[in-house]
Image (cartoon, rainbow, N blue to C red; front, side, top):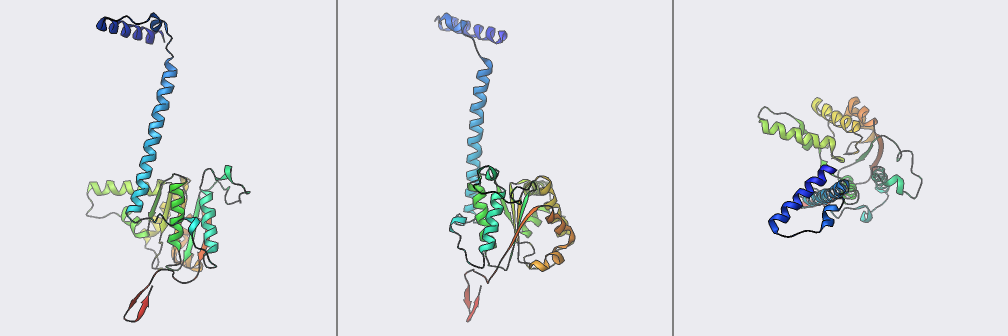
Length: 275
């Protein structure tokens, strides 16, 4: 501390010589609380960092909306429920609450055993194409992005595969980019895999290894995940296989089925209506 005082006093003396002005002696006698100054500077720096993170997050969310990856209008509050999607809606809400770090301290009702599990949560949504799986995923994503202020990555199976599968034409830049993209998939706050086995066919050995690895790495990091698939419940094990199913079972699993026919707008072609 005395060294800091000496430096300060020397600085004041030099300023007095150059300016021709005499500063109050009380300035020389004033005790300098270096630790207090450091705490103040640290507080200012922390505030600036938090503000920058907030701006970065807002830009990230807006980029999702601008690219059409996510519809900002898809929120739980306006989701239209009926007998075919009511259970899935409640399941998606429970899952979302379970991954909110402030949920347990703010919940008005006693949380269920699933909600207090120490294992990361995984939501498994089943249903035919057009029944509303993606819309529920959007509701979850908007909640996590705009209210929990956490990052979300939404990919289908083919997009994930492109980020992981090597190619003979890959340059060093391509390899580095794929590694970076894969790292994000394994570490983002919430990963939504919207469309596993979209054509209901068996997975290739590479797909099995890729999905299993993704599940296990995220589990080890205690990070939640959402998976949607058109597969029927009794076909899951047969199509996905032991490795993926056992990886899913590691999680605190929420699961539900969206029933009914497609809700998507259709088109008329040569007298035939397609949805």
